[in-house]
Image (cartoon, rainbow, N blue to C red; front, side, top):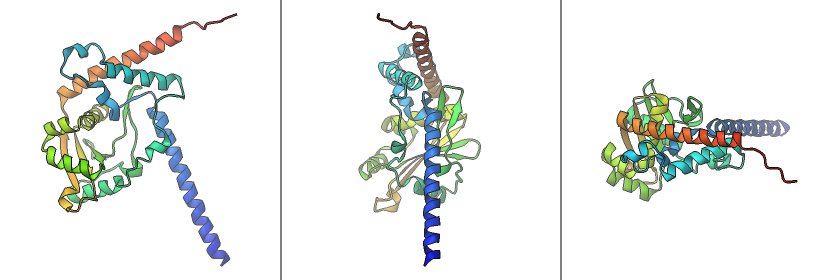
Amino acid sequence: MSSIITDQSRAEHQAALEKIKELQKQEAWLEKRRSRFTSSEYVKLMGYEDNPKYDTQLTSGGITYAFEKYMEEISTDSKVITSKSIEHGNEYENEAAIRFMEETKIELHHFGKDQEFIELGKDLGCTPDGLIGDDGGYESKCPDSKTQDNYLNSITDVETFKAVCKKYYWQIQGSMLVTGRKYWYFVSYDPRMKFKEDQMLILKVERNEADIEKLRKRLQLAISYKISLLKKRANRKPLLVI
């Protein structure tokens, strides 16, 4: 009996250590992305994307986003996701990656718990859901069934994907900007759909240089705005009231 208890205790201890390691990895990931402009939020910069006015000035949404990044640099009480929010409520993410590989015969690496935060300079970054060889990437979403059905009815090519899923389109183009990769797969997965053919939508998105250039200009404006706020903070004089 004592050996059974010892084995059980050892297993519980190992599980606790794994949990601690996972939390430490999450905290390290949060720290890396703090104050960086990350691809999952690039849509905030892309309002009025075809208006040349915003080639030289930020939209109101872009100003708000850049200010959030500034606050992340000067305060711990800033709008940044926490370890709890990393537990995405997405129990199907790893399952989606495995199913994608089965369906396409394409091998993923750096997916699931092996995802890595990729940096570009000191201001940009992204965390791909997976990588494919040296040139490709992978992004998965696990929506509710109503949204999955809408995607299946509405998305037929990259153009309709951009219209229906603007946030994810710019996340993918932004990830290609950061990583230098040439293509990305978008996957929407819902195993609750009764018909197997409805459970997974797979779309290949090629690198769009014109859109990446639009995004690059907006990012340069956002970085410059954040820098101007940091300079203003550095130059302000403390107020002493005697």
